[in-house]
Image 1 (spheres, rainbow over the protein chains, first blue to last red):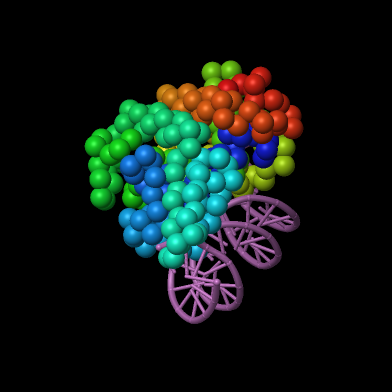
Image 2: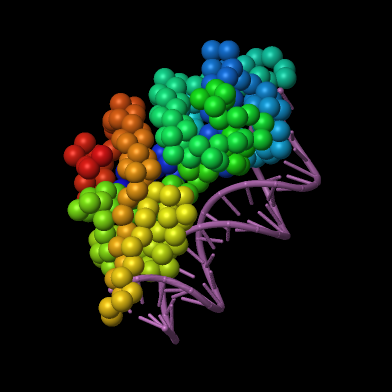
Length: 119
Length: 119
DNA sequence: CCGTATCCGACTTGATACTG
DNA sequence: CAGTATCAAGTCGGATACGG
């Protein structure tokens, strides 16, 4: 669990604000893909700055890929889950199962109930 | 992924500094148990304040239990993993498997290699 | 031995404004 | 549309000192 340990590092960027939510939005998209503005709209009150930061971090870590169409205006950017990103979603599903076993009393979310959510 | 979502909340306190390492130290102990001073010594440079904070948080979340012997002096405190805490170790093992699959190039820890570590 | 209290610097986020 | 720049506010951990 040295700072360079992958488990530790992964946990670090996954718990930055909005990071998990960004992954889930991509997970819900067709082909696990979403445009920048779609992410921003569905996440609600996130700022462009933070969304951009999170996407950059997730891209550097290989969880998210990016396609940019700069030939036409306005520019369109698409982000998508990589295979590694999808693998991580599976890990989070295990975390959810743990939560359903041991944290059954706190699992109420405002907009969706954990039992029914995409995980 | 509302702030009250258990997955989100769990990720929040697990990635606080030293939290995972505290769990692993307990995991390595006989009966998954360690004294306060043993934790402090094996973690090296952690301060009492932060160790105490992490233990309190993990206790509140039901991952760690505490036994205090205040009858004799000096006081002795023992901390141990609960069933929920052990369950979470399993989830982290899944995370490690993900890391071994997709992050094979970064898995060098200073004091231990992920391939051989307790996970 | 097992903590708590206080101060302080570093880092993170949000608000706002602006650009190709 | 897809970002970047700047600044203010809040949060966290480390150092230090102290107490039952």
